[in-house]
Image 1 (cartoon, chains in turn cyan, green):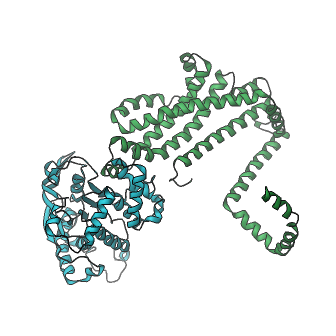
Image 2: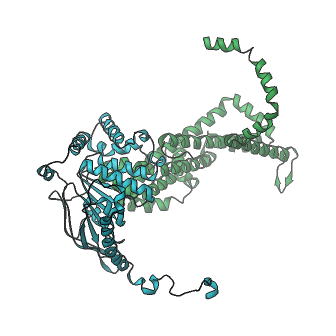
Image 3: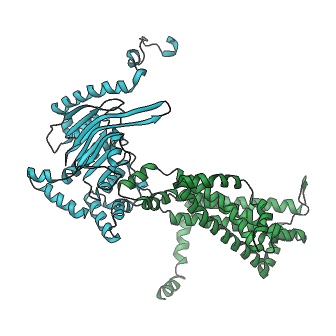
Length: 307
Length: 293
């Protein structure tokens, strides 16, 4: 089913521009309303996230960006169905999320490929869980790997692959069951800068062809702007939405777009928002003197002598 | 058929050009042989053979000179004595039946232990209540050496054979159980979450993630368990057996057939080595993804 629908989607994406009403038919709408999560600690309750409301329209690419520990990943885990909010609601296409399922694909920073399965067996996994018979799922996985340019690695075990390739397989694996929604939790965080840029382009290409809804968690400002239609900025813990920023850059975006003045303006705006929160996230441990690194002038003397 | 014919026809002609080539290549030969010596598997095989040869030589010297270095070698059989008794044993059917008996006991005891301990460990790793119930009992029983079970085992089981198999079972049971349990505790939770995101239910997560993720630890447990199984078996055979290589070794001492003691010991060593090799080979077949170690 997934490959045929994928082919249909690819064909549709090939047409110049789908009419507006056809776009609204597509599913994969994410609604998070007044989301709150708190958990017990030895000293009482800690608020991790409070009062977050956000939406992702069908086919939209939305990023969440914020300082570490602000609860970005918590939101994704709630959407994936791994945890329930203590207040508020998490809905997909109007239905509350109740446990994990293949309709929401998830990609993790730690690659998460099964080491005991070959690349093709990894891609087949979701189809196997759906009850697709062996010959058919093998055919589908082969087709998908071919489209993603990974055919020659189909019989390799993940250990033999580079980080970028592992993550490409991870994305293909998540897409194989034909999910309406893709959730990505800092997927490129462990990759080097160059691989990262290439992976961002691969991801946007896939997304543009499939027109599924994407919620992307990152702490990288450039990545958020380059990929997204909209960016939510979260505050330091307890996490809440600080700002929502639309990214009006035209698609398809070339890597050179990051040098454009519009991009830089967006970047400046987001930088100041994030910096404020990152300083807060570092808590009382950072003050004006600490920020200078060493708040004195050593006149080219080495540190040991000056002391 | 025709291939054989062809090689036979070619064979007489072949040496002539080769001999010529060898003569011209002679100056290079030493360096090539040195490189060949540094080839890793060849090198380690040669060093291994040399170390065994040195050991046998030391044994030979100590026993033929009847050294008395506080440790006394006067009554210890020489390698030649042992070789002679090995030849004699090889010809007699009793030695073979002793070996076969021990191997059968290991096979039964070890297979039973694996069949019980692996599923139990997997389930204990998955279900907390089971773990909390079984763990205290296993912690109390675990430190008891298998030899200490011999009298109890003789009382428990109707036949001598069953009690020896039971002791072998006990020896390998706990290493397998604990390693399986440890493997379950160290399964990467991200893999479990990934599987569930791809639509896997409880049974599928168990089969597709927990089991393969735990396999390397299970095989560690099997290797350790096999070693302990032999230790337990030999002890049990020495105390209560009528057959088996452990009994053979002990009987040799009682009957003052000293070369047979060494023969029994060597047989035990070779069998232990062979069984742990078998497990390692099996592990490589079952886990093709893990790098050969």
